[in-house]
Image (cartoon, rainbow, N blue to C red; front, side):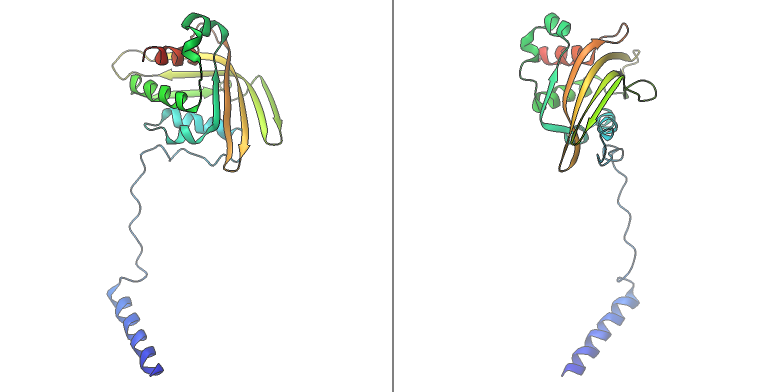
Length: 197
């Protein structure tokens, strides 16, 4: 009886192999939408900035959301808060940040480029400890509305507080501290977008 079962199994395997359905390579997955293509696993503190750039440039928000700490907060520059009103920035947590980023992407449907640090990615100050780090320095957004008008440029100086969680490094706090050149800060745009809702 055992011999007959073994022969039956061997015959079935021979048929499957001869028909080409076993060991055939599978078709490749279709190319991604671009959102996950630029995502890097945040093994280091600096990977946070690469993923922020990825998330802000992408159509959707999953990459941007993944790089934010569960208790993320945005702190505006004092002058922006005084001009737009403190109520605009009140309770700025992860949910508010994602709502505003969705509105920003709706306003700027063309290319969205973001740079953290100077043109070489160097910050004015870095402080790295076990499980946490601070980066202080400039950032720049170049945002295209895709309507033929010139892109808008925003630039400021901020302190970025990052922490290491079980899934890797994430951004806990973005604190705008100054303007950079003659540009408005991203915080001013964020507050304007939230205030107009």
